[in-house]
Length: 94
Image (cartoon, rainbow, N blue to C red):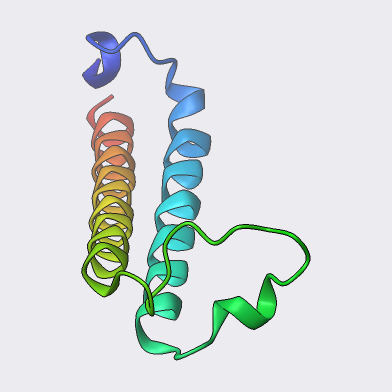
């Protein structure tokens, strides 16, 4: 069994892979949205909320956080793909 080292039941592999893929897709989507869509967040959050990091105040930190989000989303996508391939390999191996 491929997943015996992880102690994951084979029936749970597909939902775990789907959750990782959805989380990775969300992070990639929001990262690319913040990177390519030029929007003013100060107009969106005028109801007493404090903006911690914005493009206008600290552009380097803003772009670093977007890069972290994109990298983490890509890593989650690759993990989901590898887990799905391992599941497929395990099911054809029996």
